[in-house]
Length: 113
Image (cartoon, rainbow, N blue to C red):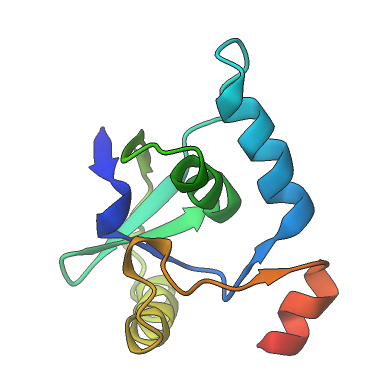
């Protein structure tokens, strides 16, 4: 299915610069597009579970929508974790991957929390 990037929220608190650079290259090359991100629907909102750098890179190259794979779990504990991250992303005004920081390393991301 296709979703607008402006309707997506990131699960991760940041993206990693090297991953974004790699994905920008992939989107710029029509022969090797990245795999579609996986998303989870929580309270009517879409959270990118796997592929945050791909969405960020797609936005950088000017795409406005992406093919995605719905991977919404039925397990309530898993849904609670996504709901918590959605609340943080909303409070940081990260809808459409706005205001999403770029970290150099995964360790920097974990320090960010």
